[in-house]
Length: 367
Image 1: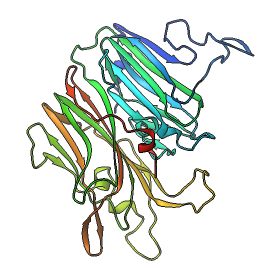
Image 2: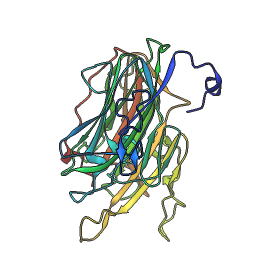
Image 3: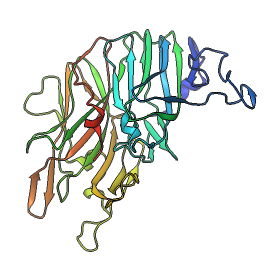
Image 4: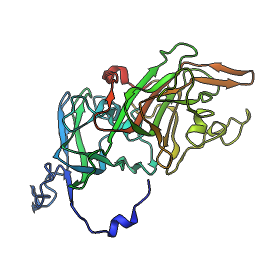
């Protein structure tokens, strides 16, 4: 994402800046920082909220037209009730009073922190800074109303939920400005050999696909990333219009993200984070401290690709899939790994989607 410098010094026109957080939950002008603390009025009186198990908080409910420009959040990584708060909290966003949420994603995965664990991310669209400051810079237009909710599906209460939603009210917003969407799916070793993981399907109408986050836990040995990401656009049937040459290639890497292709000494993974692509997370060890048993785990890999300079345009429909193909010295082979993904896209107001419901907390539990 690039800065439109001309817009920074242009006359503001019909735009009005607003911000919502726990100090000003309605975004009302002239009402920020109104809560009192032990230090007195307007001295950090309500910086955060908490949620009991099963409780939902409305983080923002705003009348439009406008554009959400930045979302910042930080939450604890775990509690006494379990280590996977980032996978147990669910972020949902509705535009213009539509019945179904346009965004329905576990909170951590939305910010490229899958597996219920933190990872630093330095990119154009998502930044996760030390220690757990999660930022999203996707522009999110709305015409009549925007509603953002956070639901706690953790086994117990979660305290210390900090958030801020920065937006503008924009009377000049184009009536056909597309709505932002994000959707989470998982194939938890459940696909058949040769069956692709579905990243996105069921979207009809016009739009632009702008990003993918992949959280993959390897359930078999040897290299796991030979699968191609395929984009079936509009009238595509058996074959797609676009495909990558492999998963690590799709997210901008090469040669298995390793420091070398060798067997002795064992190769080391090299993580990276860049504006439009990255591989920010690798783990083969449990770091939750939630068990006294051996801490070795299957290898987990987190990666992202933002199609911001090169959005994938569709006019009628889009389907995005990921092959599960591995490699060793004797050739390629079909795999069945634990693959979780987030698809990010814009679609025209009134466009249709038919997406499966978000799986239950238990079915989202990281390996």
